[in-house]
Image (cartoon, rainbow, N blue to C red; front, side, top):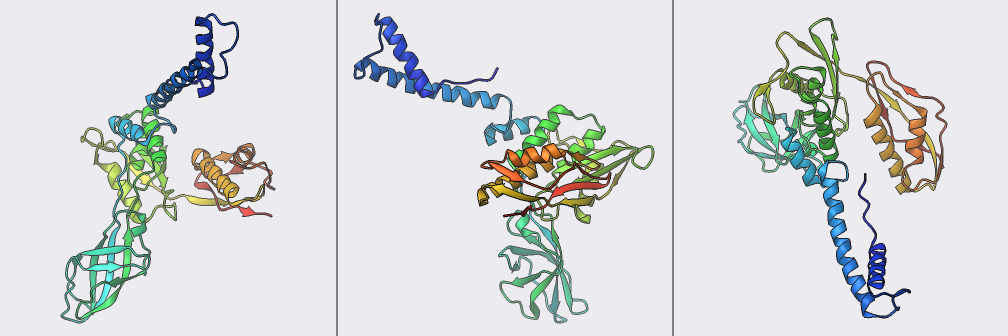
Length: 359
């Protein structure tokens, strides 16, 4: 049964009643008396004990109400360590003179303020140098698009001050605690089996920035496993070719985070990775009251609905959408023209875009 501690007022009232009973009084204590002061003091101390017990009750089984440290410690014990932030890495092209050399550890900056270090540079060829670069700080803010411009902090003779990004990706923030909790629950519900379908899902989500994955048996005939995944924390949740290769390599062979033993797909099984198509859904919603807070609450509810129920070939019920909007914090009433369930094909993933707010 759930632990429901008494309120401070209830504790004080109970202690006052006990004092009255012990003193043989048939009525309540006088409004002003030493016994009431004692009851308040003891009640406050008792409430502190109940608060501690309530906190302990929430730490026994990791849930969304548990402390972050509790979830992180239990997850590490179960072999699901929290994914640490990763630095973005890639290559950039410099325009140079024939004899120029780009010093290692040269610093470049991007328009968003991110800084990068040169870790390797080729010799000049066709008036160009291709340099390997790495972000100074870990996080997805270090990811840039191809053809973005980087600028040298300190000019180098014979080298143009600006470089063009070829690839710069792989940066990831520390794993949100909610994502870690989901992976912990999955580990407890689906223990490792050395190559079962759920193992492929677990292995994929151990890769930085990968948040959801789906595996299918006999995807292209016997001895094949189909696997697809998304990266919800990125601007584009569909993975890049580099991320797909990273997941494929990880599933082939990697060190188990809990034991350090080499694990991976069983011999004779081929993993076929494929990319989903996005099925965007934009709802037209009228809110009462219509404020920035209620809009944000609705978006959060729809995002959680998507994370829980959207998968390839899935159906999100109309009632689930209505419940998500109607139970958003602060929403008293709403209207939306959506009149049927939302259905995706076997290679589609439902995503809720920013709603169209109707005033």
